[in-house]
Image 1 (tube, rainbow, N blue to C red):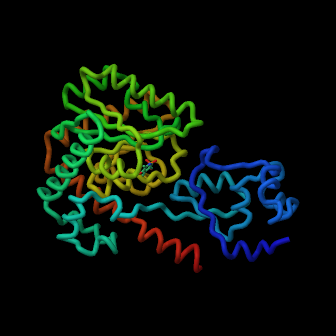
Image 2: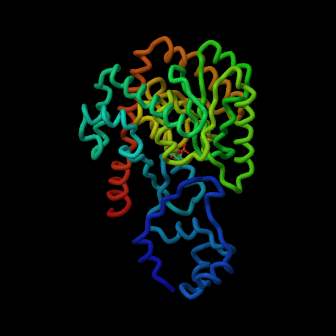
Image 3: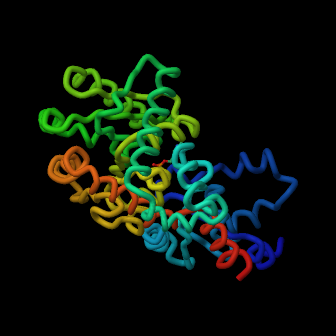
Length: 357
Ligand SMILES: *Cc1c(COP(=O)(O)O)cnc(C)c1O
């Protein structure tokens, strides 16, 4: 028997998703075949679940502290694991990795400490609208050039560009934007839009693969009305170009499945406001009309899509096309209010609250 107390003293467990397939399980017979010499199976069964080697169960039992990755996720995980105490530290992104070169140059000129102390980006709202806008135009151009080298597809840098890129899977509802094609066409006739998608599905996620096919079909069905691009092989490099190169970052998860979500934070550091269902980190980062816009969740895709269209047509697109300085103001408050979701801050919290407390 090993010393559980000693192991718990050394371990912190951060659970990352309420989605079932995110929690690995293996048969004990497989474990015995591979690692029988290391630990006695009856001992293992006591901490890893009786029937299967449940990695989440193992981590819960052997950790001195358990974290969720956002305030909302803490509540959900606490309901999932009522016999354990669950805390949370909200995720953050690493700014030097995710800020585009044009914004990095701008920040370095006005707020040189930003790389090591990203919280100082709270002062980004003091930079002029013109310089923020120019950095964004440059990021959009850089993305257009990147695409040109990657595919035959082109984007028009003058058009309002919606970005949606992440793992393609059911709960993220990448098809929500297409619930009413006529409505989408009508909106784009008033205020021209273009849409950039990217994202892979897990090879065993049949619904995820089907969703990608559905999106490709919509791109074809709308080809005379709305320009849409699906960028293949989504990875960090694509993300580094795509996210800063769009005008709004869309996310349409079914709450409470998005434990944190991080791409919306990457967008914020590049002055790209978020348009998203309230879930994960966004519940903490959302200020309506200041850091982006929410999409109401009704538990009904048609109603949710209706809210999405309404926000686009009545609020977001008129602001972008007709009130440029107000739009640029939203870009600046997006950066300054949400730069606190950075990994420097997150790491300090892990050290202070989880590892040395
Ligand atoms: C940030 C990132 C993600 C996560 O995106 P979410 O919208 O938070 O799910 C997935 N894939 C890549 C390549 C990323 O860079």
